[in-house]
Length: 273
Length: 285
Image 1 (cartoon, chains in turn green, purple):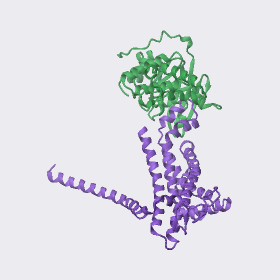
Image 2 (cartoon, one colour):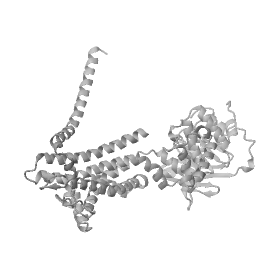
Image 3 (cartoon, chains in turn brown, green):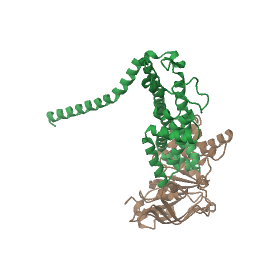
Image 4 (cartoon, chains in turn cyan, purple):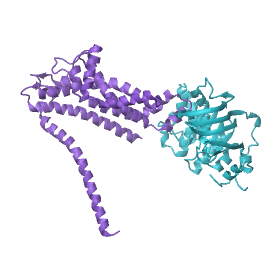
């Protein structure tokens, strides 16, 4: 096999920091009578980036949305199996979904800033969660925008509408909005698919810089992107009845250079999908 | 293509345009005619005294102040009752209600509510608000009656305005651990507000022109004073117009048209207000 993709240097990272942050065990997901995920099991390590790759319609986004229970919003959804965050079943009784989503934030495919000022966009989450002091909010906003590598571009126009920013800036604003509530996990559903290559690289750099403190899962259609940013990669495919299944899961370097499954190799080398 | 075929297509096209323009003109003509005719016939009656004095000689002389004030009170009362209930129902139906038999019955009821003849609302108001609730013939009973009628429109427009808020915005808020109600309150409602207000303004401008329902729940032809409390009877422009044109002999025609003109101005100015709100918010986006 002959692919030429540069891989992130993961040897430099302290392995002992990594624990299992999220865990899915034998998960089946149904929308009504349609089975969307079949028997998916994987452990997501903390403080790293996990990429979910695979052809369209194979259930990547549904798997992602399993971890913050965004699937719950769809009428007729049903989940079987076990999903855990820090060893606590998130579909178990007594789980506050709102609290869960505060810990597991999400960035969407299409940048979706709120129709309010840049400042208010970032301050929105903390405000709803009870932070009232103006000074405290200003601190959070600046810190989040700096983390999202957007501060220098917007510090003089925090009062302007978030919708006036470019697509890439909007997406970083959305990331800042998530960072402002200090989640532990950030789910990203094709965060760069609506962006140009320069903006895409900025978001990727940003993601790398966030791995110190956050566990990131990214769904992407872009093989190079998965190879560039992720530490671990999960390859998914559809079964004949269109249910999504996990084909292969492991360190990105190995998945991309030495896949165990023929289907993974075919997909990565561009023979289908 | 041959020239003949090309020409025939052009002729068809031109005929179709002409026909469409004609249809549009036919639609607009009655409205313009009514407005112009009312202004011509009633314009002479308009004066400061006509707007600011009490009527005398069974409305043949003096002004129509109490009818104007009564109509504004009615609009206010209708708004106070119909807006909160209508908006809350709209929120429930779009954001919370699942698709089950209860929701379907509610939806069916709303559709039918819009089709109920207004005099039936009047009789309903008479038996429920005037008699059963002991509000008597009053502004309160009339406002509640008109609110019932306006509800269907307020709910429908609220629901449309709420549904028009993109799902992405809701998800963006929910995805950072903001509760459903907070999302509705801080993201969805502010976005939908202009649409909701437009619908409410149109609904009350329609309520302002209603004659039949208020006829039986508290409108009076002539009263010596403005209403002092919601439990007082009141005068109103459409009812005043009905009475002076149908029941007062030797009524000067100009006065009748004067009343009609004032009513028309009140109703149309609210319609214009609704349009202005809509245009303003469209520009902001």
